[in-house]
Amino acid sequence: MARTLPVVPTAPPAVGQKAERGRLITVASTKGGSGKSVVATNLAVVLAQRSDRPVVLVDGDLQFGDVAVMMRLTAPHTIVDAVSAMARLDAQFLQSLLVRHEPSGLLILPAPLEPSFAERVTGADMIRIVEILQSFCSFVIIDTSAQFNDVVLALIEQSDDIIMVAGMDIPNIKNTKLGLQTLRMLGVDETKLKLLLNRANSKVQLDVGEVERTLGLKADALIPSDIVVPQSVNKGTPVVLEAPRSEVTRAFERLADQFLSAGADVPMKKARGLFGRS
Ligand SMILES: Nc1ncnc2c1ncn2[C@@H]1O[C@H](COP(=O)(O)OP(=O)(O)OP(=O)(O)O)[C@@H](O)[C@H]1O
Ligand SMILES: [Mg+2]
Image (cartoon, rainbow, N blue to C red; front, side):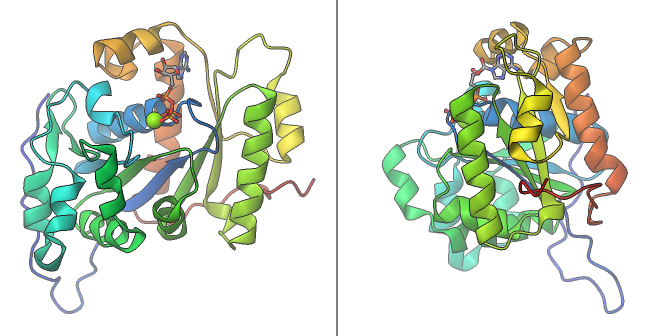
């Protein structure tokens, strides 16, 4: 399964040669526990398995990031090492900080080990880091915290795609609506947005149609609720590897297909408007 890493281009492309910029996908939500990290890790693993060029997952939940735990990785380096070396940061140095998830080939830039280190990372630092990662990766996926702080907003502004993760309960939907309004006020291009409903099959007296009507947009992905998800989280193995034939894995594969069919650096178009216009 393990692949050898392609050599990282450190020199700028020759005149006339097009630099292929990787696609930046931010996974966000306005409610804690809605499933951002599960979505980010599993989407990233599927993309890594199916991409020729490297795929990187950045843990942008700078205070309480748990990507490394969810993938059972010990992190010799974190994003703090990248920020500390900002003045001399280049693709080669940044690549030396990434941890490789051997079963999938996915590369990971873990969150700081201490919550207080999060203060050292600014939105501008984060943008510089992802721009360098985009120079040698086909996809850069960012897991985020539930707060729309400066770092998350900077990433959202920079992203090619924003996956808004919403859960199937009223407070979650209310906060998702507020989050979408915030993005609209910030002038975020609505074609970049994808709505993902997590635990979409839950019997909670709220169905997908009602949620879509409330938010005024159609879901791009529905992830079912499955006990195998928390089981895989506790095992430190992404569910797409733990239960490859499960419905939840199929849903993540369909989500990944939406990005793979669009290509790594081609903007995708949405079929209909967002932001509650209906
Ligand atoms: N589709 C699902 N089916 C069953 N359980 C799920 C599903 N998605 C997420 N979970 C459970 O919900 C928990 C929270 O998910 P996750 O950690 O991905 O949320 P989060 O949005 O990243 O939370 P935080 O805001 O704290 O970072 C997970 O440990 C997992 O067990
Ligand atoms: Mg999380």
